[in-house]
Image (cartoon, rainbow, N blue to C red):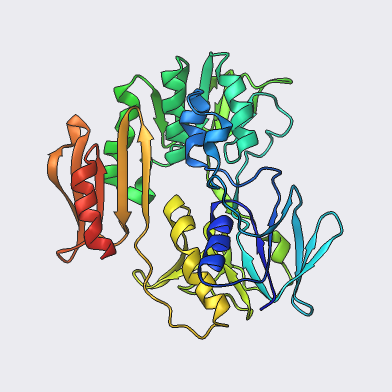
Length: 384
């Protein structure tokens, strides 16, 4: 294998490049990224960076002096994959031919229809998004966050600490019910009320009002929520449009095996765009978590370098964390399918506890709020 192209230059792409070198690949390595920035850390964008406590230099993912011996093609988008001559087409007309390809194009924030061109409306996915939103928040005023997921909750927490008047709108009856289940989703989302942040659940957004700049969020039940700034946090879509017609199987991202192998030989997928097969659940799922982008590329690279002649191992269960209102929230495993959840330590009303999810008596997930040491001991049981 003389040339490997990694399409996507964020954490998953960088992790794949590092794994290639660590596993002995010494050929030509090309990293392609649609953003002009070198790889940077995304989790601080909704927290420390947005609050002004962390600068751009602190976000860098590359270690001082790190040299992967790679060619970096940044600020250019991949537009197609030609399986006949194994080449990646770029928006600027260039073509990169490769023997092996790592798809790491990630995901893009979903937008609110009709919000295009209206000042004061933001999503938060990239460094440029965070820059623009930070400039808005320093002005203060009324912030409305559409979407009560983790990104929306973290933005609300940061804005609250900056002194803004904050409202969170969630279409589902209970925020975070998907990843945490209804009971614990309700406990975690109660952090908003604890800090005087309004949380409106079970109501959808009809649209936005304003001439050139947003001035209110219009709800489907007829209410209007005044806003100086709006953040849309309604999830992300995998960036795989460029693969249409390539022969790579697509279904909510790139359909791939436990080890990242796709329907095309010599092509693997990693990160937020990869719809991995999960043997724990017997189904495919996209794992949009930092640890997945850091750890899973090693398995995909091993498969790529071995030309598919490897036995896929069992991936670690998903792990993620969130920091909201000074509380560290940690979760590992799969809440879906659990038939019980019990608090093993602490108390939910004190916002400091550890809860274990079980199915037929077997632990399948653990949630911790401000219980980092105890959570770490439990997590080791899932990753041993």
